[in-house]
Image (tube, rainbow, N blue to C red):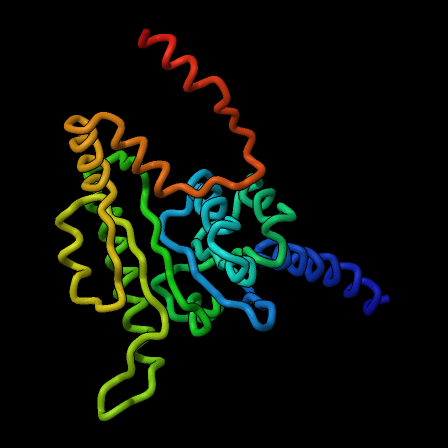
Length: 242
């Protein structure tokens, strides 16, 4: 009877602990398993649903050639994916191509789980519109870039007494032009200031009307299945000018 009573009191508490542990364990804390014979890219920084949707739509465009569909992307972020993000990952277009890993981009352990050792390029995204001065956002970008550079140097093999060059290139976005100077010494980094580019395009558009539209069309890929009907536009323009 004593053994039965002990089991009756001990088993439920143990089961409760196991259930709590299972609920706290994330399915995105594991090392990602990439398909064989595929190129690999990492996306980190400020991960927002709309930014990721636009990025993937542009990245996996047929205009970039057939090899782009043999490329896998791992999204590295420190939060669990939202329901909308999970729905985007389940899209048949991105199935077995886009993966999500929970972790910090400044952690070597998280970078290893995202298979940074196989990456050919890393994209550090930033906010499109900062609610503050933008210094905090750019500081996070600089820290991530420094962590990536430190990981690449630590993982590289010594050649002539010096660490070998990193195998991946870093493409980063900043909000403030002054933040670019903190990344200039990283030879593998390519930095674009969002506000500087936006203001430059707006200024050029004032001098040359239509320049902003031209820049957008030249930098945006349009799939063949997009239903844009421009028939009658020229005739309408001639009629208005007459």
